[in-house]
Image (cartoon, rainbow over all chains, first blue to last red):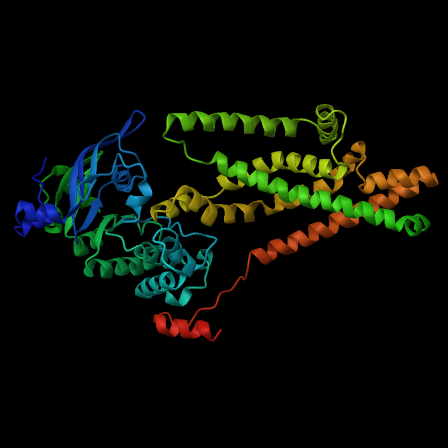
Length: 260
Length: 249
């Protein structure tokens, strides 16, 4: 197993300082679907402000790992700590999900609501904001993703890239501590990929903590400060983009990167 | 036929009134029953063992209800409920109109339960996940996101039930309910014009069902809303100018 280097260890922080900035710590995480072992003994952590990209071939368990973190999947073994608290035993997943947002490959905008109300639903029902505040929040983030002009449109009237930008705004409206992206550009055509990635890049520059499952190696190289390479349900190698893309240590990593 | 219509117009209109009353209220109450059962059936398995057993028992009761009322003719149900009530109540029967409303409602409810369940499971799983990812609870997800879409999708089936109910209330004549068919039978005993009377009643039934079908289709189209939407200002508009535009209409 490769040496595990984390971004904060890189810049020479002490252990205690590191611990206080850790938002998510995954310990010995395992997940089986029946006989099928999808994740095996996964260990890693996410610091505040990190942009972590999880890369790897299809079926390597990347999405399952992401879905375990906001409890869409129940881990079979191991722990997930959110600010030091074990969430795997949590009785009320909604309390975690308010703070850990998620953006999906298939957008999952609410088809019955227009763009504005898609973004207002969470703040209204979960954060209990009043209508005016929820609308203000929604407009602020819709503006930041360049979708403010489309508040009246229904999801079916938007292009894929527009939908994904609205979905990102919707997640941001909850003011999450971490935002999980599950292959956010995989359902988009090449032109639309660009508009979504540049939105995500802006968020990264603003210091949002992001955990991104992606096949966009260019994005991972430019924007992430931490890369996790997975295959066959284990973390094969992790480190800075430079370590993974320029000097990969593991044969499997080299093989994977040479093909992409 | 025209003479019959002229002479018995008041009775026919009363019959039409009762038929429509029972069909409309029966469909609405049936839909409410169906939504409640549909929502109950999608509640995720409770963690508490005792609650889990309770829910299981509830499931069995609901299944029995749906299967029994779908598996027996409404005319027989009407007799069993009407006379069963009388039996339990020392021969005192329940008011005929109230009986009719109850029978049609619970009969429709059994069908609606399946229609609503179908509507809910037809909604893409992503809609649930999108809502759960924001921290919405199961019931918030249901009422804010899933049910509005499911109800829109099942509207054609609900319209269908309504039209069926308009016709099927005719079986309530067996308990002496004054709906349209009962009125027709009454007219025949007075005029002996059997064919003319029933032809007239057939036409009245058709006018009722056809106009209701058209009305509901119109409502469906309205519910789909505008095909177009208004793009406000430019794509890079800020919040302030948005508010200004909205206020200007």
